[in-house]
Image 1 (cartoon, rainbow, N blue to C red):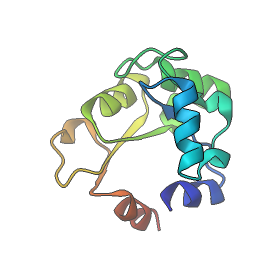
Image 2: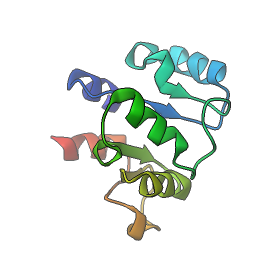
Image 3: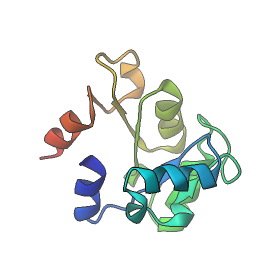
Length: 120
């Protein structure tokens, strides 16, 4: 629901994953979200350095012609948040009951439904 809601708001969405690009595409197709992401906005292990390196986020910012400070990285681990901070983006932590990294987090939501509710 969160991904669809963001797309309905005309948010550009990207994925940074340690998995290979073809596997990310296959996973998105399997869960019915392949149409929400442009192929070039899905960065796997061969397209971007691993998080927490900011290269993937900086690549998306350049591709989308936006300042990194306009990006929001949503993730479930410290490396996601460190990546956001290193790029100058905002970091949102999801899918954890508590926030063990408040110094890296702009927002914490226990799950995607809570994040969606927070967005209004």
